[in-house]
Amino acid sequence: MAQATVSMTTRRVNDKTSIIDIKGSVTAASEPVLMDAWAAASTESTRSIILNFEALEYLNSSGIGLLVTLLVRANRQRQRLMAFGLNEHYRHIFDLTRLNDAIVIHDDEPAALAAAQAG
Amino acid sequence: MSTIDSAEPGSEEAERRSDKANWATSGRLRLNAAPPQGAINLNVDGRVVTSPIQGFGKMWQKTYRVRLSSLAASPEEVIREWKAHFPTFWPPGNRFYGPLTGLVPGDVALLNLMMPGRQKLSTGVLVLYADEESFTLMTPQGHVFAGWITFSAFAESDETVVQAQVLMRASDPAYELGLTLGGHAQENRFWEHTLTRVAAHFQQQGPVETSTLCIDPRRQWRRAGNIWHNAGIRTGLYVATTPARWVGTGMRRIVRK
Image (tube, rainbow over all chains, first blue to last red; front, side, top):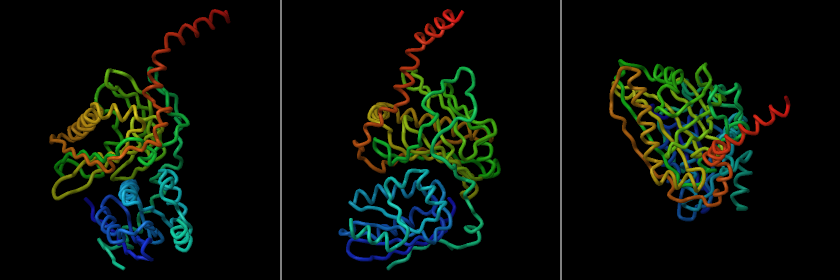
């Protein structure tokens, strides 16, 4: 399998909310990186995981599959997934694959944090 | 704060890949050409694709792999040939009516599948994504499962690994029951047959490795209403009422004369 070209940084905003900053390409090869980042972002009290796609360079259909898998795992931990920083093209991909039915997309980080706070 | 790295994001390779042309532009299926004679064209036009999020049953990831000598074919050659001859690798009794030009993003193919009990099922798929090393088909409302299948090939040591990976939930309770009562095994045989044929196309033999992972054991009961679109039920009704339609058509002709 091809080597992943992605890095993910996690930030714990507060007890209930964490952000995963994604930089690079999200493909099948990104699975261990994404799942490790999610584990690092999660605590027992975490209720919202926000994915920051501002530095996303590439996302293919396997990457979309990974996000679906992450969504299931997060929901099982009673966490919601949110996203911001998607460009117009990838917003369209979320719409096309109907991922936006379950991952709410926000325009920017403050909007996502406000939604996490409100939820 | 913690950072988890793999290789080098921002690399030239990542920047080189602009992928807009690799994706379909719409998630609503439209057949661009009249279906061939004898094909049942139902449950395709106007249907919307469904991801595993919209499905009903347990969520599965099934991976089928066969290994070829890298001398037999590169990953790009495998995918090029697979796209070009996709229907010919399918098991007998199942028909894939796709574009003659190969599979490109946005293409819609009509499927006539043979279900257990020799019941026919008419549905379709959308080519969601395609590049040189992979392509993905996504299913519409009414299909057996909600999700997608990604066909890919990649190099691993001195081999070319050919893979089909399904991410799916049964679309509705009827399909979930059918999959539980032998449908999963039938699907495994379907893709194992297909990969065997792909390998044979490159004069290779190899056991197909199958791995199945239950991603989510829960059923999404709020999606039980998907059964309204069930393509199996609708195709069955269509086939059962065919004699009545013939009679009706004949009567109309007589009346016109």
